Length: 209
Ligand code: AMP
Figure 1 (cartoon, protein in one colour):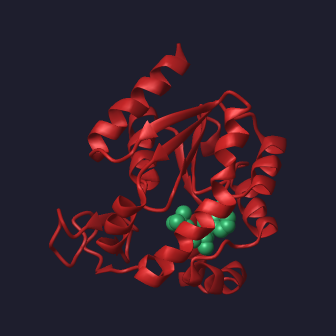
Figure 2 (figure 1 turned 60 degrees about the horizontal axis):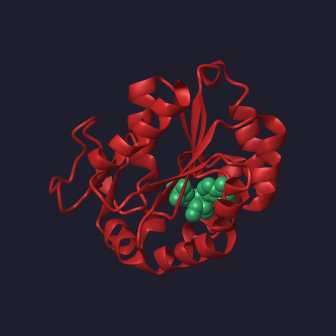
């Protein structure tokens, strides 16, 4: 199955993508993680993306599209994949349509106040990118790999507001785009991760029949 996760930053796309991947074996592709990894490794792409990512701006379409295009040729995508954080603009969605035929787009909906609270309490693992929230996890190291937790530059408050604005202007129009293709399903993301996942499974279950 080929799935796209839509939603504002902090809506819970990463958590749901991880759960879907575990439950159904589809490959989780996060363009945000790809950029962060390129930035940490100081690759050419990382050098170009650094400024955009740290300011909460979108990396130019051509660069993101090339990364995703190449990633989708890997064997692990044959069993299905979940795109988390891509597409984020109409040109990206058009480019994606030329590469694959999507089965569904899950639109995870959450109010702005919840998003701001979630992101400002978010901590990421420097080793494996696992995300934690200070309200439910008080340790300074990761339970999975022991890596040190840190606040991502793009999770800092001033950047979060930028990211929300960018989402409303550039990404929200995708809701209409996919609605018109009859592949958009709304998911209430204001509940717990587990409850949200119940709804996600319900949608995927119906589509698989
Ligand atoms: P994320 O972790 O998905 O919120 O992505 C973090 C940052 O990576 C974003 O704020 C953008 O700077 C960049 N990024 C990730 N995906 C895309 C995309 N599809 N188009 C442009 N920039 C992206």
